[in-house]
Image: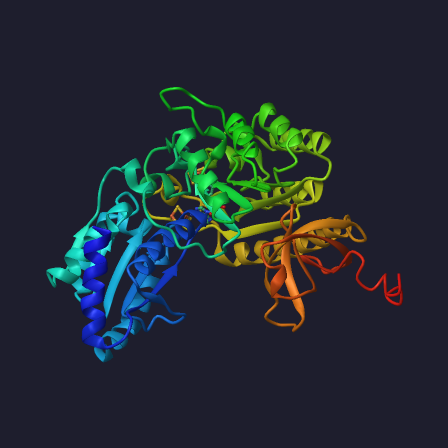
Length: 466
Ligand code: SAH
Ligand code: SF4
Ligand code: F3S
């Protein structure tokens, strides 16, 4: 199919007298980011050239639907894009991602957005080459959304954003049904990939220059439970760490209810596992956690954190917090602030609760006044920032390995990279360092990032004669 599509692209190129351009606008989480790399892989393999703006021959929107107003934002945006299509009638507009797993949204596009040419969902993303081919070859709209995922979707070419690091899906879907969250409804039930397939994919990535992988799943701690031969996530992690040439392993996301002692042990035993754990709290109030269907309490979360810190003292913790869940009182909110103080997260994603239609929490009666929520959010962010800078102070003065990601766009002569603990470091260097892991002295903490210098830089000034 890829070959036939390539041929169609060639025909279009000849007509236009230039290469086809493409652009993917990605919303949402790491899962979507990874899916977009697959979509871009298909497009670039066929000869399309990625461009920075949405004014492209092929424009895809990879949507997220976790928040209630996401669809209105998308439709507003589509309205603006219409003008691009009026200027370039050959333009092809496609919409995919989580929002397209919702029947009502697909219907709305089918009826009201006739200039959208292609619609598919997350479950059948692997059919993208075929669907795009039909769209171009038969000059018709193609709307194809599957109700059930098909695991064969992994065999797609990929165009990675970074040459030296990559996400790797280890599972799809979610079984947890937190009461505020739409993800299980759109992404479907949990399906784990076979460990051999995952390991093979990572070996290939390493051959292609990848040094760091991020294992992706909505709840990686329940990985492998439903496989014919069940595998624990901790054992998968150990096997991934044994891959020669791979230098760093991360994973996301870890649900606190399923984080096992063996996972802590696997992290501790393997230096390749980054000293970073994203452990979503959502709320620090046991009463609210129960209403959220999170299956842990404030106490069990805190004792888990204590255990992790005891076993892996250099761990950096980050989290997600929702403010203003139905029924949240000032006392519940104070419980959340207390947990933030006690844990000392390196950073936190803070979300205003969104009353997401289709979730059980949307039907709960005691929704919180938006003004109260806004005030709590402000207090939460202030506290998170205060504790983030304290957490960053911990490592100031140390020399630690940094994986260099890019040339710093704001300060000439500087590059930016990431610590094992996930914080960014900016230090003097040039493009030749990109993709390298180098030792950097963290000379100054700026809260959410560090300024550093290569060990030896500066210190050896004047010692050139040796
Ligand atoms: N599987 C991951 C989270 C995926 S969604 C986990 O359980 O940790 C990412 C984050 O979006 C969630 O952690 C939650 O904090 C936030 N979120 C999800 N639904 C939300 C809603 N209705 N309102 C506000 N935030 C929400
Ligand atoms: Fe949503 Fe909860 Fe599943 Fe995370 S674990 S994706 S928050 S239902
Ligand atoms: Fe959004 Fe889908 Fe991720 S709804 S948060 S992109 S799984």
